[in-house]
Image 1 (cartoon, rainbow, N blue to C red):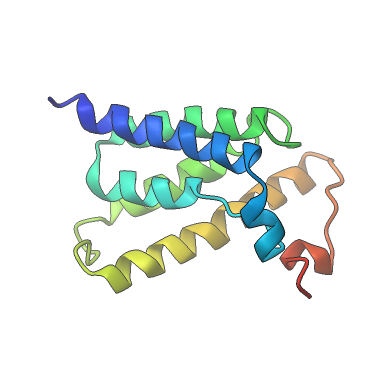
Image 2: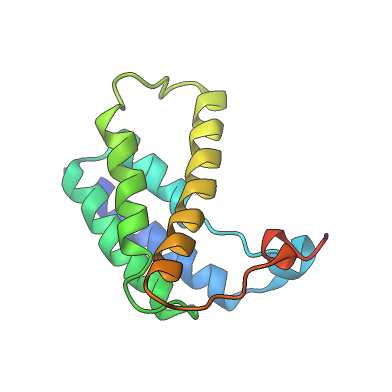
Length: 138
């Protein structure tokens, strides 16, 4: 049953990416898109193997980019950086504490989109960036 955990993680990532693109209720309610992929990456980097973290970064990034306006593959490297960062220090982290898990998810949810934005800006793309980037409630 060593294959069940990676398959469930990848299946959850596929469902999360599909849910983000198909159902817009939360986006309209909060005024911003909720991205669950960094949180799943935190879970995978704290509980799964390096192969699972790498597959999640590759497949999750490609799935996310194929259903969004991002160029294909731009999310893969930021997810991999985030996942490898948490994977390399996971013995030092308080993995069993809910507050620590919430803070790690918060860090990943902030760092990953910023790395995607930096990647887009360095490749010559011109994403729409402004006060509306932080959320429509401003």
